[in-house]
Image 1 (spheres, helix red, strand yellow):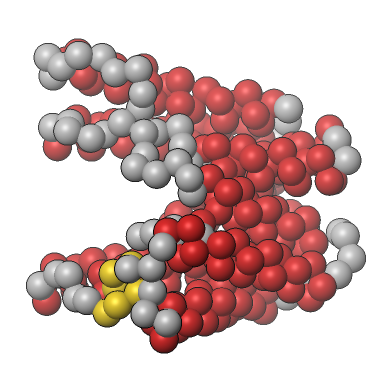
Image 2: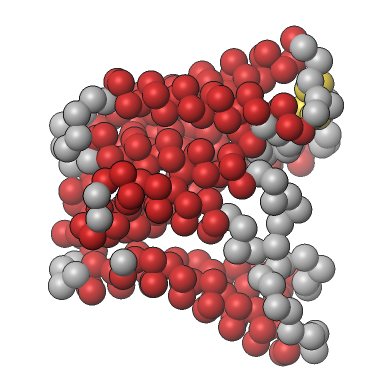
Length: 264
């Protein structure tokens, strides 16, 4: 349970940093973590504090286990079939999302609409691969490499998978967000990634699944507009929060369960 305590300290550190930055900028302290309406420099420093907190957990947790970060994370990237698992995850998440978007396009639940000029669009698309790789790698290290592994040391696998999925979903709502009804989608996504780690005993597959999803979602976002009901198709970067997306995540989780049979 040490990992949950450490993860809980991240938003505390972020809130303290945000409060100090707001006071320094002559603005009132906020109870919620939120970057809305903040001056640009405050937003940058606010984000930096959060990154420091995440890095502190990733580096500090192995030290609490009396080992080095390199030694602790090495089993998460075990040899064997790493490239195949990584590519399988990338392909699977991409395929599922492509089929979802294709179905919604055919049924007129989304429409093609380029929302940026050529220069801005090129800049956004150029950063998508780096965003996908970076976010997937860091979040999988944090939520599967640290959190799930820690929980599996203290409780049966079923309980660890459920609790790790809940914490993963809640982490996306620590900061103020526009939508809260998307929580079941994050919960299902967390379940998929936790099952992927549990079935393989490594981070290659969950990193591939996670990166593939971000890559397609971020890459296609500037080109589409949602017109279908949110309960069916989700919204914006949360297509998995709608009914169809939740079903797709369930099917993909079942695919992972069957394809990578046998617990490590």
